[in-house]
Amino acid sequence: MHIAVYTYSLLPVRGYGGGQRVIVWLVRALAQLGHRVTLLALPGSRVPEATVLSFDPDKIRRPGNDISALLPDSIDLLHVHGLLPTIPRAPHVFTLHGNVRAGIALPPNTIFLSADHARRHGATSFVYNGIDPSEFVFRRMKDSYDLFLGRLHSVKGYRWAIEGAKLAGNRLVVAGGWRPSLRRSLRFVRSVEGQRKAALLANAQCLWMPALWDEPFGLTLVEAMMSGTPVLGTRRGALPEVVTNDVGALGDTLEELVQLRPSIGARDPAACRARAERWFSHLAMASEYVRMYKHYLSTGSLPAGTRAVEGPG
Image (cartoon, rainbow, N blue to C red; front, side):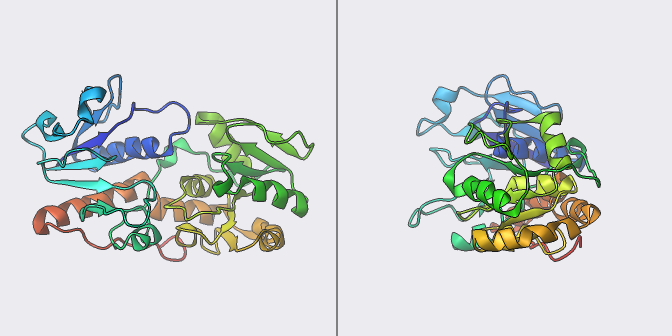
């Protein structure tokens, strides 16, 4: 197939940019599966696995400008990541990377990021995000710290992670956007990426992700698992789909997370890696998207997503 992928982003992204990194991994995996990929992205984008077409960012978001006019005639389907003011004429699907407010109608060809994400928007079509295993370090032996990785926003639960690690008697490394504390047991390393991020994930005893909102997916969950690091989180959004008992533990309150923390060390790092490779690799993501593409092109509708099961599968 010849797939066009649209994003209003500069790729590869600088800094964290979870959604943008997923798009790069998707393009890479589609190419590995033998598909031809054309990437429509902001000027300056460089993704070796795709033919990159840049567009005028001022024009593309004006009503009436159809991105289909930029596409080669050989395109089978356009995969849109980000809302457009004009519905493309080309056959297309749209991936929603966040949550929308109740009452906002989404097109019927919308693909969500998890079964819970789809259900909350009245749909059943979803594809889990996937990451490239080669960008992460698997390590069985861990260092003497827990990790929180993500935006220091209240809904991400970083305050729960800080307080919970303190109550559990564990040292915590916080990788985020600003310094919240100078306490001795808390180390702050600002935002991280690349090899430094991979090392932090691989060496951590566990990843704290006490989400206080309904996560559409939670990319750091599978980044930790791919590194052989178990997860301690809440039962919000997609977390119960991603984090099963063999790779982590979930609770509903801070007190419950503190009580669960001593058991985290019993999880096998190899089981964490195996689950991530089976369900949440970039190749698994691309294969499921190809299933969505083919079904949509043949029927005009999207199939239900494939839910991850217990264990590596």
